Image 1 (cartoon, helix red, strand yellow):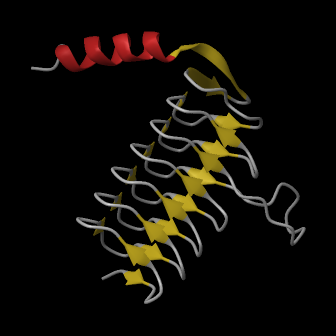
Image 2 (image 1 turned 90 degrees about the vertical axis):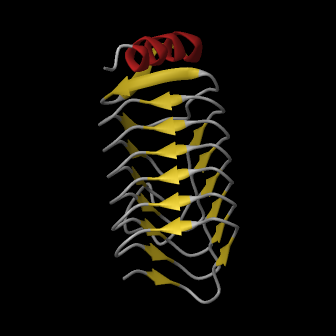
Amino acid sequence: MNHISESAKLGKNVSVWHFAYVGDGAELGDNVSVGSLAHVDSGVKVGENTRIGGLAFIPPRTIIGRDVFIGPGAVLANDPYPPSGRLGGTTVEDGAAVGAGAVVGAGLRIGRRSVIGMGSVVTKDVPSGVVVAGNPAREMYNREEYDKKMSRWAGSQP
C-alpha cells in the first residue's frame, strides 16, 4: 500500500511502489518510478523517465529534471538552518545522478548530467557534467570519464 494524494498529477506509466508517499500537488512525468518507502513531498516536480530509489526523501520545492536517477536512501534537504521555517528548494537538472545515501543541502543546484557519488554530502552547487564525491563532496572527474568507467563495469558483468 502507498499514499498518493488526490491532487498529485501522474503521467503515463508511473510506478509508485509499496509504502511510498506522493504529496499534494506533486507532478510526476511519464515513466517515473518511485521506490518503496520513498517520500516525494507536496509540490515536487519530477520530469519524465526519472527513477527515485526506495527510502529517498524529496522535500517540498524540489524540481527534478528528466532522465534523473536518485539512489536509494538519498536525502535532498530544503532548510539550511533547521528549523528556520524558511524553505529553499533543490534543483536536480536533466540527466543527473544522485548516488545511494547521498545528502544534498538545501537550495542547491545539481547541474545537467552531473553525478553525486554514493554517501556524499553536497554543500554547494554542482556544475554540469562533473562527478563529485566525499564529505564534503568535491569534484573527482568529468562525466565522460564516469561514462567510460560505467561502460567498462557494465561490460564486465557475466
